[in-house]
Image (spheres, rainbow, N blue to C red):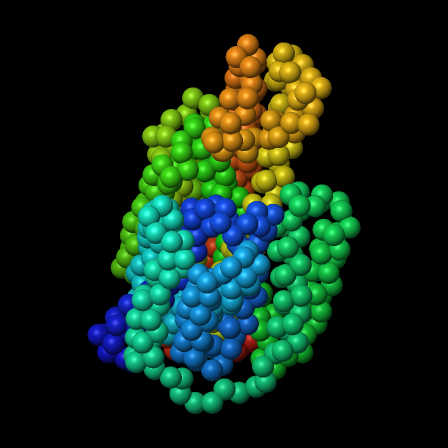
Amino acid sequence: MEELDKRTKIMIMIAIMASMLFASLNQTIVGTALPRIIAELGGMEYYSWVFTIYMLTSSVTGLLVGKLSDMYGRKPFILVGLGLFMIGAFLTGTSQDIIQMILYRGLQGFGGGFIMSTAFSAVGDLFPPRERGKWQGLMGAVFGMSAVIGPFLGGWIVDNADWKWVFWVNLPIGVIAFLLIMRLFPKKTGKATGRVDYAGAIFATGFLVPLLLAFSWGGSKYEWGSGTIIGLIAGAVVSLLLFIWAESRAEQPVLPLALFKNGIFNVVNLIGFLSGVAMFGSIMYIPLFVQGVIGTTATASGLVTMPMMVSMVACSALSGQVTSRTGKYKFMALIGSVVLAVGMFMLTRMSTETSNLMTSIDMIVVGAGLGFSMPILMLAVQNATSQSLIGVTSSAVQLFRQIGGTVGVAIMGTLMNNRIQEELAKIMPEPVKQFLAAPEMASHAKDLTNPQLLVAPDQLEAIRAQIPAQVQPIFDQLIQSLKTALVAGLDEVFLVGFIISLLALVITFFLKEIPLRTSNKDPEPAKPENNNNPELQPSGS
């Protein structure tokens, strides 16, 4: 596709970015609307599954589709992905109960895996690495834009219209993207060789699903040492060993093991994994700080986090442009890692005295760090591997970052909850302890010492209204103790995130910089002895 004229390439990129906007908007729009949806459908105990099922199906699909699109071309897979996503979105809006919604969100996840896996690969088909940076920067900006628009759009819809439109409002974007891809996207020429690696796909699924479930449930639904979590992790380990065995024998492996001989591939995915741990594991808890500690409403809290997305959009586009102009990517990756580490350190300084303005400034710095580095990592790994494996490598980068995010959220959540309980035991005033120990309060003590109470103002006021006036000062002391304990727990989360971001920065120094290719044709090996693995460029090893 590199030989297409510039106008056609731009039109195809518009279609690809429309596809990504459609998929990412459907993700970000749900967060603010879901509490209202659950209130109508019921099934609060399955709340997290609306997100978890999407993560599972999109992760499993992405890796397999990456390889299949290398073999058979991107066009059929991005069209199938858009079709599945639109069907899933429409059906989700017709859900009569929470189980139906979870099933339909799973279908959306399959479509999302198709779309995201092929979108970044298609950029690699259209443009050589030297030109690719600015387009991948714009694609990163699409993600940021959806994160800005989605939460407000979701909140507005559930406040002013039927919640079903949360899932239906973006369908026209999907239809337009589908028609543009069908009309403009060229088909793959030539026939694919080799057999599909079904065994590798099965074992990869057997590894990813238990692993992601273990880290989603560990420390929340089940104890980390429970038989369920240990069993899931053991199953993931066994499946990983079987996956390695299958890939070493497959004619067209889902994830060629030879890629792990490529130094840039390894460094980029390690940085991506650590950045995912730091980013998702910390940023997921910012709304808890804003609503629980500062006391900002759920709707207004979006204004606090919006600056992060705006800075991420701007810096993502800027880093892509700079990289395309200079042909250098390591400098931008280092800048991104440094700025992210600074932003994570700033989060550790937040306290009960922190204002919304200061939190927004912290978010701007974190967003800038992510914007500078995220597009660059994808570009670096695509430039260092064969053009014939661009789908596989692009999918792997996204997968490692997603696994890092899942692991980060789980570990940070466990650390936070443990620290909160330790802090409460130390700082809670004696009158509050006596108040909670009273016979009439015994059944409510657990709920009253749960920091989630701080982000439920209606519930908090209902409890306050039932407490006698003479006990109100003690109740106020309890709330202040909860806020102080929550800050201590979140400080630990952000401190761990800062340490991990520092580790990612150190590893970034080991990222080898090789010249960005000006063509999608793989260069000839410089030396015969470096040609042991024809799928990898010698310069990326």
